[in-house]
Amino acid sequence: MTLRLRAAPLPAPFRVVLVEPEIPQNTGNIGRLAAATQSTLHLVGRLGFRVDEHAVRRAGLDYWHLVDMRQHASLAHFVASERPARSLYFSAKTPRSYLEAGFQPGDALVFGKESTGLDPELLEREKERVFGIPTLGAVRSLNLSNAVAIVLYEALRQVGALDAVTLGE
Image 1 (tube, one colour):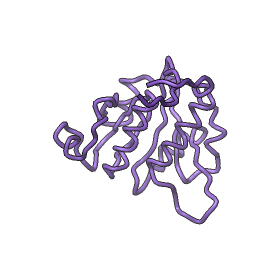
Image 2 (image 1 turned 45 degrees about the horizontal axis):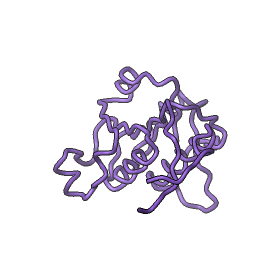
Image 3 (image 1 turned 90 degrees about the horizontal axis):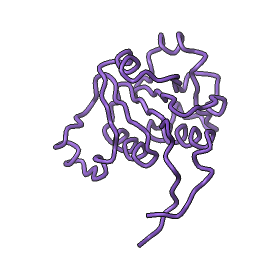
Image 4 (image 1 turned 135 degrees about the vertical axis):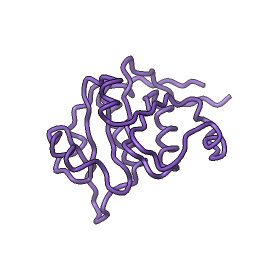
């Protein structure tokens, strides 16, 4: 038996929200991340791929049954049905760093599609709650699954979820 580092799940888990994701491999990676962190994965709007049982099995996502995944027709539907206390939005087009977000358990962490990100009107309307990940090089943006991992683990760190780790199965 191999022991691994484990931490207790949060009473109010983070909600990872992907608006119109286009690349199935990114969503698969984010699904695994959501399962590993006991976060809920919310897929919003039109998807660029299928997530039915046959498609998931064919893609070799053997952990997909561990993912708490929910689909929503729109971001408004997500908000109405899930009622998050707070939504934070992530974009490469903002002057505010994710390190300034002041994460709280239960926050909805909202990311846009790979090609264009979140709607500019949404970003303007919610500009006080839009954050980005600084890069040191001249790349346009980070891969979506990498960005979600960076933000989610910083959120877990900020709320103390990683303070008490143990070895377990």
